Figure 1 (cartoon, rainbow, N blue to C red):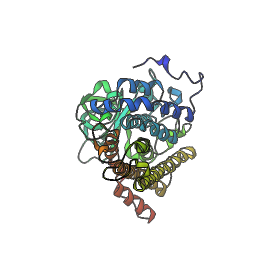
Figure 2 (figure 1 turned 90 degrees about the vertical axis):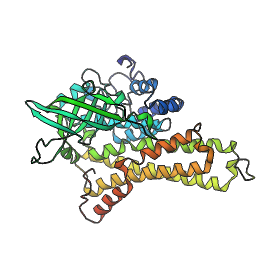
Figure 3 (figure 1 turned 45 degrees about the vertical axis):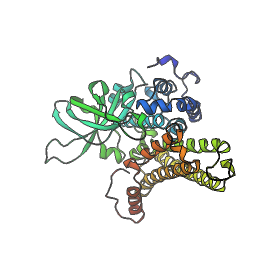
Figure 4 (figure 1 turned 45 degrees about the horizontal axis):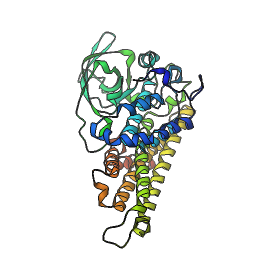
Length: 406
C-alpha cells in the first residue's frame, strides 16, 4: 500500500478537502477506472493501481472521523463520489461505497475500538457483512466467534471487517444480533464470488475460527438501527447520527447511478457512428426510436439521482439535528434508494435496446455495465416490492413489521 506521505498533497496541511475537491478527485480517476474495468471484471478484484488511487486520494476515508485522520464528510458527498467512480467502473465504486459504510459503522463504536482500526494508519479499510451467520461463546472480557460471512465486498482490500453475530448464546436467551469488529489477519477468505455482474468487488466469504472479540468491539445491531452510538464523541460528530440504514443504502446508490450515466454517455457518443441494421438509417442519431430511448433513459437517470439526493439530504439533516427521523421519512429513504436503483436498471435496458444486439458482445463495455447494474440493483436492501410495502405501510399508519432495516 502507498506510503502516507503521498496523501492529500493538493490540500493545505490541517484542512480537510472540501466536498467539491473530493468529487473532483473521483472524477479525475474515471479514465483510469474505465481502462481497468475489463481487467477488474476478469480478475474478480480491483486492480492494484485502482485501489492505490482510491487510497492515495483519500476516497476510502470519507467517513473516518477527522480526529483519527479521516474527512468525516456528509452522506451527499459519499453519493457524489461513488457516482463519479461508477462512471468509470461499477465494481470500484461499489467497493468504495461499502468500505466507507464500514468506516461509518466503526464511528459508532467506542473510541478504543476506533483507535484499534485507525490510530496507527488512518488509511485502514473496513469491510462488513451484517448477517449473523456465526456462533459465539462467552468468555471473560468478551466472546469467541466462529462462523462464515458472505458476501464481503471489498474484503480483499481491507484490514478490518464488521461482522454480524447472534448475541444469544443459549436457545432461551433473548434473540439479538450484534456487530463485532474483527481484524482481517485473524480471518481467512474463502474464494466464493463467482457471479454474473459486479465481479470485481471480490465479495468473497470470510471465515472465523475461534476468534476472540473483546467487549469494547461489540455493539447491538438493533440499537444501532434505532440511532444508538457507543462513541464518546457522538454529540460532536453529526455524521454518525445520519441513520444506520440510510447510510448503508446510500453507500451503494452512487455506483449504480454512475453506471447508468456511463451507459448513456457511451450510447450517445457512439450513435453518430452507428447505422441501424435492416433500416435506411446510416446514423442512429437520425432515428426517432433511438432519440426517444435516449431521452427516456436520461430522464430515468435524472430521476434516480434526484431520489438518491433527497434521501441523502434527509440523512444529513438527521445528523445535523441529532434526532432520528420519523418512520415515514426513514421508510421513504429506503423507498428512494430502491426507486433509484430500479430507474437505473430500466434506463440501461432501454440503452441496450437502442444500441442494438452488439451491445451484448463481450467486447462491448455496455454488456459489462448491464451485468454490473443488473446484479447491483437486485441487492436485498433495494428489493422494490419489499421497499414499497414498508413505505406503503408507513404512509397508511401501519407498523412496517416485515423489516427492521429502515
